[in-house]
Image 1 (cartoon, rainbow, N blue to C red):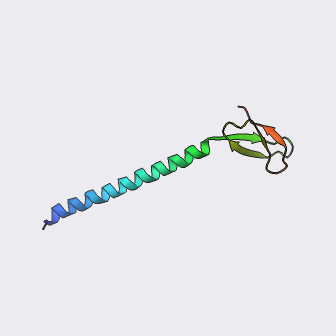
Image 2: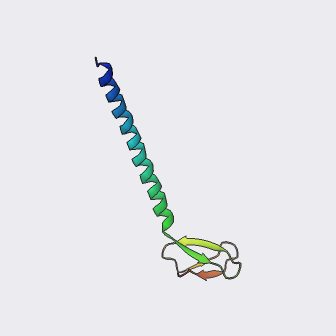
Image 3: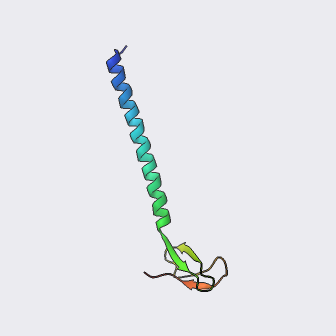
Length: 75
């Protein structure tokens, strides 16, 4: 059906397409995970000295350890 050089070229192209497809898939997956974690607000508890995070837009949140309400960190 195909001679050896043609079959080798077709095989190499298919392998390259598979690697590029996997690269694009994992790059988009990692980028989405990074963006999801990026949308958090950092808070510091002044009572128990713990750092924790809350959803974006939260100005005041309770500490998960002691329950003290703290304002978000401003840099």
